[in-house]
Image 1 (tube, rainbow, N blue to C red):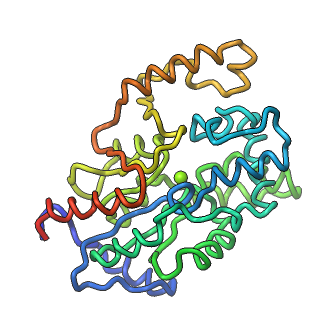
Image 2: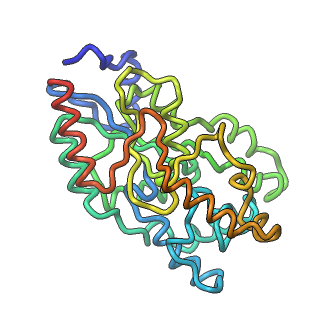
Length: 296
Ligand SMILES: [Mg+2]
């Protein structure tokens, strides 16, 4: 095995896995951990949201997947402010979004192939801990016996109504500050080899973070989706690109925004450490090549 890959540094990590009842990683032929995002990598969340959004909120003209030009919904047509958007997403989940989202084509077969190649798989999702039950039910139904750990970063939890607002006391904020972690932190603490994620924002954050090893690739940017057609360099971001859809609409900047978007799609910039993979079949091909390059 190449010296680039450190073994799991701390024995207590393994004990933690045992204590939580998860499978102990097999040591024989073990090649390391691959971290996998959930929404639109494992399950077709946004495609399902399109249907449910049109049923529930009656946006006109009806929403399509092409309206999802940004990973953050409030940057797109059909939503509201960040807080309103989080409230709308909560309604979609209450309406059964968890179980209505089918798996991404080829995910199950590909994940089993990666396991057979000797990798352990973990999920790192921006969903919050409060979504654990619905998330685990989905995994149990569609992708059982594949993942060793699920990490919830709660990336949007700060936008949810606090308990104080909702129920008249203040417990929530302490919980949020305790649980919120970045995907990069979890990649580091689990010594994962790389992340498979459909968000170009996550791809940028993780690829520019401190990493547990010096392999060239940190993120496989998954899927050919409108929301990941551009990877933004936050240091080069135009003011226009930081505005919500509603702000751009009010200021008459929607056409200009689309022109800028098309220009950036053509430029096709990717941060070092990020590679695009269009679907699960291509992920497996990529990992097999990666195996050969590691000479193991
Ligand atoms: Mg995702």
